[in-house]
Image (cartoon, rainbow, N blue to C red; front, side, top):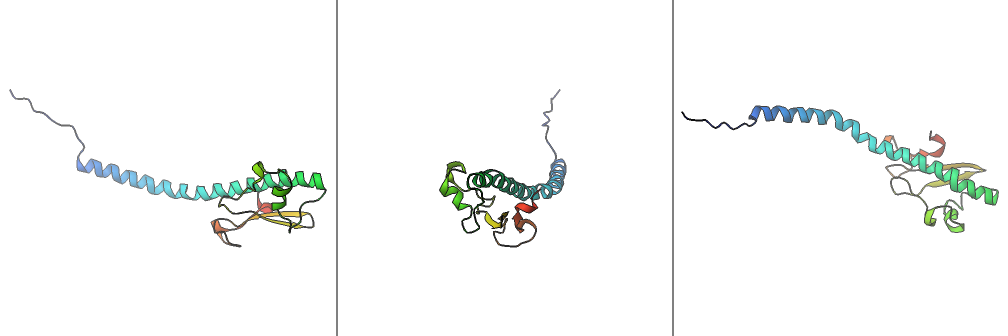
Length: 133
């Protein structure tokens, strides 16, 4: 009596079915994940701007009775005292400095967004403190 040695393995068709299923899953999941990175960066910018406004700018106003002028800008906060850690101005999620505008005490902070240009649409749209939730 002769014993047969059978090797257990996947057939080519079974492997192809698994590859197709994985491809379909990736096609469904990837679009949902790709937009989340930019959305998270935009949310982080809002948090940073609120922190600058509620922290450093408010402390400056308490100490000096006014906010810095537009011309003095946020750079004044890094020169006069340690309103920021290591006296370094925080940057937005794309490595750009925030734009500061003081219009008679109405403060606006702006990030130019992913395109690093004024204006823009979708992910490249400017982010304003006044529009943050």
